Length: 423
Picture 1: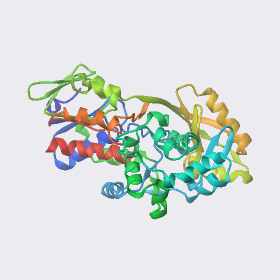
Picture 2: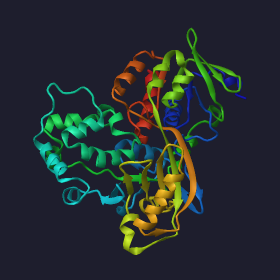
Picture 3: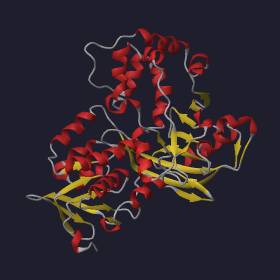
């Protein structure tokens, strides 16, 4: 039961993923009256680090890209990030049963692309943008017209399978890569932009105890009396000057302000009178399969000593070699579209053993993600802007469906939601 003193908090924060934790941490630092509610018995959302057979298993996010924001937060929380191994820079694509290393040289000299596609890609340097510029289009349409449909399907689809787990023709360019169109308009082409100023590589970082170190560090800075795990929210309703928050236990809270830090579909269900439009944001089903390997033949170590293999088609979206990326992790993780993993696990086992020369494949853990990665469809930014414009000054949203699916964007959204309500 919730203590009487917590029946009327100033701010109720629904959801204790990274967005909700960051909102609560911001409220704690500001000395505000808040209550953090999470229906699961553990905080962290998609961060679900565990330990199996003496190795860390990361069925969700493996790490984060270094940025001034993230490094400042780590310093503030007393966390010391660890750097990914250099060997993890290598990446491969699986297409039509063949493995291709991803590099500019291999794209030109290798057999992933036809010669027609290669010549068309070189012509991107001279290809003008439509005038007037398109306001939004799919990622697939953008790369197909600027380079070639073959490159879009074989390369871009494979890469985005490992990020968004979505069809590239379902993804908004403006929402997923807002700077790409601007780059083309400024430099005339993406190739020209790369020659002018090559993109800087950002370091991949994690923590000694896995990504759950970040979750635990945030939790440790919250007042335990203001955190309720295993307490779900049934519905949120507007009152005259406040919000009524109905809990799964039958209890009812009254809050002056609310931060909804769930995913989009949950937010739409919790507060249908104001957030029903968020139900338009779809989620692709995904299952991660954490696995171990007993032995690796030396002649094929270049495959195991890479970030992994991305697939351009089929339910097997990719294979990530976790142990080569961060010391202490399990062998790797399979990413499977949907919830039926049998065929994909068998396919991955065959690929690892016959094509990569690896042996001893065994499954450690299977984790279903029915709503882990939102689909940023064409028009996504307009939808979010429309929903936010009707929220008023006492209701705010936080989560990875707003502006980007990265951990940093989730954290930023929580901090910004609190600042918005703080005024």
